[in-house]
Image 1 (cartoon, rainbow, N blue to C red):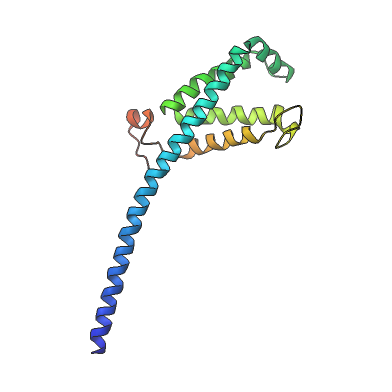
Image 2 (image 1 turned 180 degrees about the vertical axis):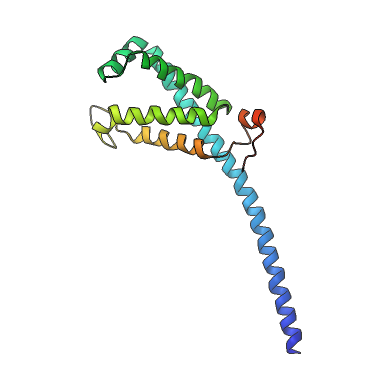
Length: 166
């Protein structure tokens, strides 16, 4: 009789373990979908933010932006390069095209902005100038997009066929 109890208990344990594994598989599948939604939101937000910043450089007068770059010891033409990367890259991120390339370029732009301008004001800034917390947040989002797999809802995935979790 003891062997029968042990057999029943072991079958119940195995059955419950299988049920838990199947449930975890379902949870993982749902989390993957939520992860892709989160990545989509980050990509669209970051793209829109850079697109707006790029347009602002032209709307405020690209000459003024060139003068600011020159005051930092950077060549004036770099203002055009940064503004165009922000505009083209912003549109590309929104569409999910060239995500890793533009994420890498945005990382360089944000690192340059923090080193050349924002570190002096500190993390939260001063009354005269904003700090580098927003620049750092943009940089971290760009690092995530550089490292994350292609999203299901992107032109990268459509054109290049990479799997979302590969």
